[in-house]
Amino acid sequence: MSPEKQEVRKGPFARFIADGVRSGDVVTLSGQVSIDAKGAVVAPGDLVGQTRQVYGLIGGILSEFGATMENVVDEMWLVTDIADAMAKSREMFALRGEVYGERAAVSQTMVQVGGLVMPELLIEIKVIARV
Image (cartoon, rainbow, N blue to C red; front, side, top):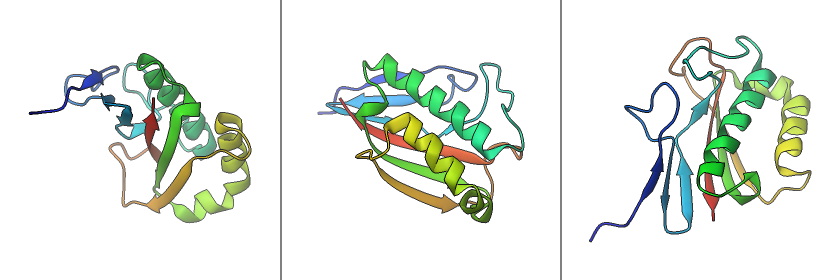
């Protein structure tokens, strides 16, 4: 017997990829990148700006499941330049604090990748939430 699933498909890649899937009380989101509704990169060359855009997209997808950023239990940052991310860590974690609160109960992993789906993208964020 296969589990019941609810999916959300939005944005320019909806035909190919579910942005989020809920099974039971777990919601997993596909990695989100800094693009607009037409697929254009938002804040090219600006890691903090791209991160802000991505968190906005994540919040919008979670709302489709009746969830908020408070429901997130795990996140992964995939960055193209970990040295740049660490150099901007004060700004990045200040932004993360705005999103989740200063002492958020959200586990986090950051890894460097060789590239993302578009060369202008600097970060992709993937989250898991409980609802």
